[in-house]
Image (cartoon, rainbow, N blue to C red; front, side):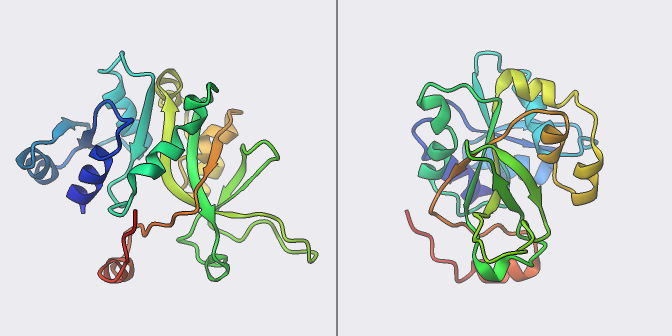
Length: 213
C-alpha cells in the first residue's frame, strides 16, 4: 500500500521531491528497495502533519509541502495538482485540503469526515458527525473530506508549535487545531473519489476498487 502511495505521488509532475516520513524500519526498507527517499522521524510524534513538519525543517528551499498519508493508495496525480491549485493561481493560503461531494449513505458514517465551507471555499468545520443538521429541506453543500493537506512551509513549521485543542482531541481530527487557533483552511474540490484504507472492511473493499485516471 505504501508503495502505491509513493509511486502515484511520483507521477505528479508538479512535485519537486517525494519523501516518505516514517518511524518504521520495515517501511523505510521497502521504500529504499524501490529507489525511494526516506526520512526517519521520532515515534513520539502524534500526528501526520507534525511528522511532515519535522521533515520540512530540513528543506528550507521548499515553498509548499504536501502531507499525503499512507492510507491513500488510490490517490491520482491530478488530485495532488488540484490540492495546490490556489498557489498556481497566484494565491498564498496558509493551508489547503481536498474534498469531494459526500455520498448520502456516508452522512452517518463516523469514518467519513464531513466538511462544510464558507462562500469563499474556506472550511467552517470538519466533523465525523452529520453536518449541518437538516432542520429544513434546504440542501446545504457538504463534502467528504480527504485526509490530504498542503501547507505553506512557514505555516507548517508554525502549526507544529501550536498546542492541541479541545475539538481536535474530541473528534480526533488534527485539522481542527488550525481552525481553533484562528487560521483558515482552503477546501479544494475534486469530482474524483478514492478509498482510504483504515479498517479491515476497507482493505477488503480495496480488492475490488476501480482505479481510474
